[in-house]
Length: 264
Figure 1 (tube, rainbow, N blue to C red):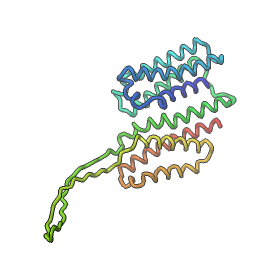
Figure 2 (cartoon, rainbow, N blue to C red; figure 1 turned 90 degrees about the vertical axis):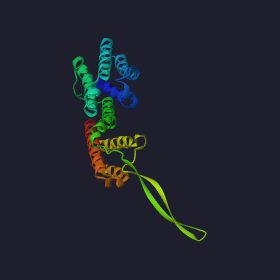
Figure 3 (cartoon, rainbow, N blue to C red; figure 1 turned 45 degrees about the horizontal axis):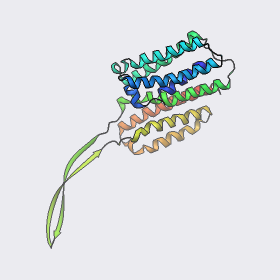
Figure 4 (cartoon, rainbow, N blue to C red; figure 1 turned 45 degrees about the vertical axis):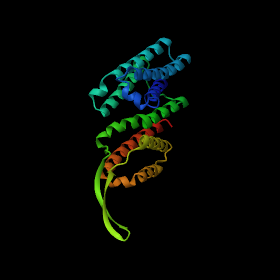
């Protein structure tokens, strides 16, 4: 079980914190981003398998087979045209389910998977890390494409208006008309994707609060986040978008926190 958790953690780390947005967008079209991404995955997977081999928990042949199967299948999936023929939301989740399913399937075939009779400290640490990564990284990246149909667009309009003012020069009054160009925006742009980091921190805090059985404090986190968007709630489209995203984020964090409590 520890081997499975370790390989899943290696996958989540390589696919999210160690994979930039540019790499994720271009790896299925360009060779260089794909090779860099596979190199990162290879390093993470090899580190895990090397540890289990050196500690005598798996044989060398098994380690080599697992490494080849995991990295090879990852390359095939990432190089496929999945993201071109399917919409972003289902493409993301199908991609991740394939990667994770292959890892679980390989371990299930080669080694027996069973819930440990004694919960060791190492198992607890791995379990907590895995579900924390699921809540903060996997769910965070997966919610964004799901919300694309509801996302409010930045609307900017320009218009001209005439302004007339009275001027007085040497005792003579006259009216002067000026043309003024104005602009109006219905939504403000997000700076450097700060909303994603707010959501990440929000889910991390909720997971911790659920894990330590302090769920009563979650309301303060939700209220604080809503306070920053208070004025934008006047727009119904933005309010609906915000509520859907927040509910999905909170629900996923609660479920991951409950999963962590099983081993505490």
